[in-house]
Image (cartoon, rainbow, N blue to C red; front, side, top):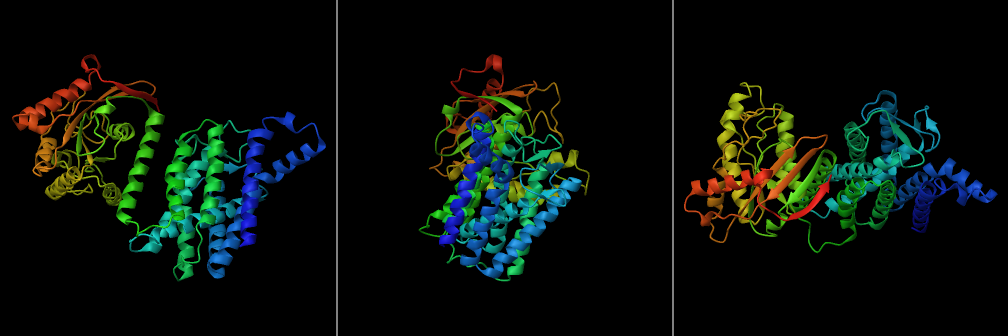
Length: 522
């Protein structure tokens, strides 16, 4: 164990040395160029610092695996990860598939076949091994079935989160050098979305191959969590510091919330097995919220007013205007300080596989699903969609039951009573001259059904959205004072009151005064 600790300390020192070179030595040559020793240290860093921490990280995890896991299992993972990742990297640098068009510079060491630095497959090994072990330790605490499968998926997930944190800093123009370059301007800080898929698939492939070749499950008892977590945390913090030095905020947030936070759970001994469903729901909501904020930051200048009207606890139904098919939900997820469950209608989907993915995602998030009969009749020819008209009633019953359960559990539910947005690439009955569609009665009926339980009193929050088209959408989200069904004599009067409030909050000239919680330029 002493040798493992020594290598780990050397790995940490190499990371700090690399940060010092990138953030201090290179921008300030006057600090070292006056002495021969300083010049020698600088030249050593230029030649070796890019790969040194990778070599030490790989050596640390290889020795850790040999001592604490199993010689055969460790060597299988080492061979599978390095060979498969090298093959994928050679394919990627030659053809652009699956990561996108890119090339490595000369700062990560000598290149294999002139394309891939020798340190890159070693990086895939030690970060992939670390991610898999952390996922295994987490999944071992749950009551889930198929734990081996979830460990593989969790390992690929943590590996991809690390890449999402690291990649923006490595190619940022504020750094004095680049370790690789993209030949395209992708959506995520210059990185194409295909790189995200490529990383996930590559990590999934070599981790799956290793697990199959092991032919037996991994024993968690001899494992110590602090070393895999230390490696993962050190490399994530390395990327976070580089991002912050370049003024990038989102990648560090992703690294902390989606990577370090769940990985840190391995350091604490649970008093009882982790509720797998609750953990999945928590991570799903966290992922969706972070992704929504990333999209809003990139596409929208958002103003939020009236957040103080949102109750901190208890059942809430947000009745929102529906203007944009995607941005409305992302804005609410970004601006409302509560966990939200959105009633969705995926009846526009044509592919069976996409239907399956969408429904599994909604299941993980506890988002109710319904189908719009007129959508299926008007847009989807018979037999060409993923859904059919005969399924409408089944999904309606399930959506009603799920929505009532959420409200009675004190959750916040989002419904768009217009049912269709103004901007929709699929189908909408709304004409361009129509400001709004009539509100449907479903939200009121759900409120009445939930309140049959006398302990449940649902606060209806009207939410107005005003869009102004510019280079970036300028959007104002206004949240109004809560309304309650019991305060109105009839369902129709209640619906009319909510509709009137949403219209008023969506119209700047007549919008009621609301305190401004803040302006986010995202």
